[in-house]
Amino acid sequence: MKVLITSPHYICNNMKSKDLHLCDFVSDKVANMLAKFNNCIYFPGDISRDIVDLNRKESRNTFYRKKIRTLFKIKKIDIIIDIHSFPPDRKGLVSVGFCERNEIIPEIVLLLGPLDMINNKKIGRELYKQLKNYNIIVNIVPNIKVLDILNEAAEHNIPGIVLEFCENINDDRMSFICNIIMNVIGSL
Image (cartoon, rainbow, N blue to C red; front, side, top):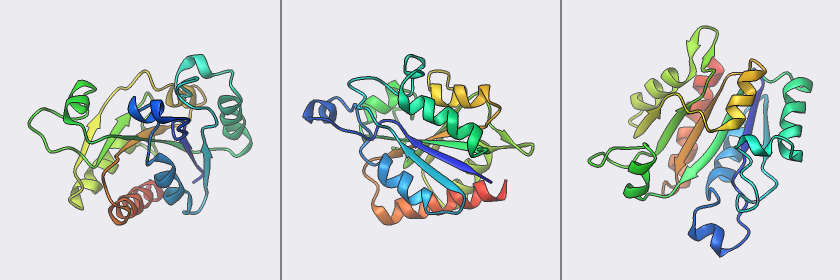
């Protein structure tokens, strides 16, 4: 199975980007961990989010998004995994629906797009189940519409998922979670 891994928000241009969380601090590290598995292509973003958000419809004419469309066709991509990260700030997480006020901050949040099926299996459900089996603190958010990389993948009949990693998990835990994810993806 050919997997395209994207990380559209990993570039931080300046302190303003860090203060406003315009960049995803651990997405590049996670994407590189996932890309070590067979048949994975990692394509990181090339523009800072304070210039253009590469995961919005307005960015479809950028080099980055055109290249993703080319990879869909040339590499015959089977699934796209869009990597992001979030700061461990409960107030912000509650406001975007990643957790409830009384919940433990998740280590990972699975955001489901318009096409979440491979071989009649729901990607999000399979990942959620396996991550829970390994005592990973995980939440799932269905029916995300604003994340345009997944929307465009669905237009090409390519299923996908967004993985949002908490920025305070350590490298060993991150690697452990990545191994679970790729074992699940490989079994679909």
